[in-house]
Image (tube, rainbow over all chains, first blue to last red; front, side, top):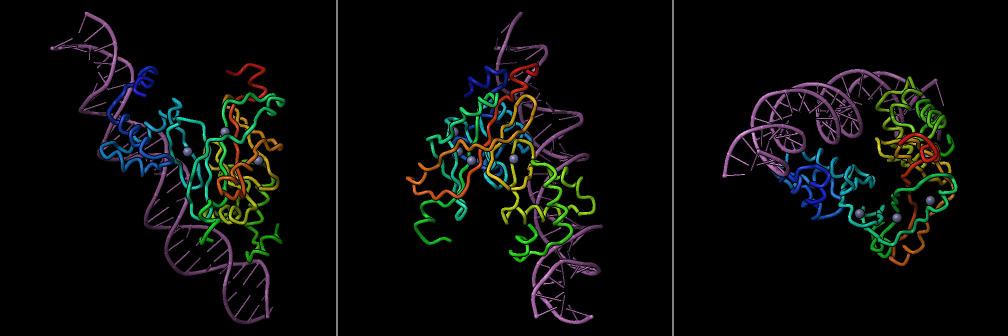
Length: 128
Length: 128
DNA sequence: TCACTAACTGAAAAATATTTTCAACTACAC
DNA sequence: GTGTAGTTGAAAATATTTTTCAGTTAGTGA
Ligand SMILES: [Zn+2]
Ligand SMILES: [Zn+2]
Ligand SMILES: [Zn+2]
Ligand SMILES: [Zn+2]
């Protein structure tokens, strides 16, 4: 990670390392959650660092319904969002086949998929 | 549309009808674009109306990379976003198969998919 | 090891975006 | 028509993000 940053010509500052460490603690954190894990890092630097990490591809910015959230872009995965309890969970098996888009002349680089519904807990049990 | 609103217990005010008409003019508009088509409707009412329409399911709120955008939720479709020229286009054929999520106990209600890459124009031609 | 410099940081201010408040207004059921 | 719950919009409050700029620092190379 540090190597990748430096390879791109960026400095590996303590602030950037702190943000990376905060991101590693949990997926899908909001700016404020990340900030809680990075006392010491200024707000402006949080914004700038998340922008920079997003541009390098190390981090993905998500829109899961509430404000922006961030996660380390380690593997390809998607999100299931429970509309009853709000839980966000991930799944690895990719149910998307974009090959047909090639017929339209579109060259696919990436995709994002979010699935909305009710999680196992809410289906099985109590919550409406 | 008016019927659906009233059926849910909401009033069909001129402001709401104006917003619906603005939405019908073009898909994927930002708040400011919509506002341009609704002179006469106050900013607060724009926010409230778009919230309300999103909740009823008449309208979808999108995140295509820049700020929020809105579209009438008429048919099921997805978006291709060209990373070179920014063009957003739609495609109808749904390349998502969420059946495997049932094995995880998740009850799927809806999904959203965005595909990123380069559009036919940019692939064929000039733009980097 | 040390100095140099481009890159970086953070406080403050500015710019934007969104939500709350509340008094006045109106769609529509009766 | 009347009554009333629902609706509107201006202003104010709040939240979010960007810009500025003077001071700091990581990393390079002597
Ligand atoms: Zn995730
Ligand atoms: Zn996928
Ligand atoms: Zn669309
Ligand atoms: Zn689909």
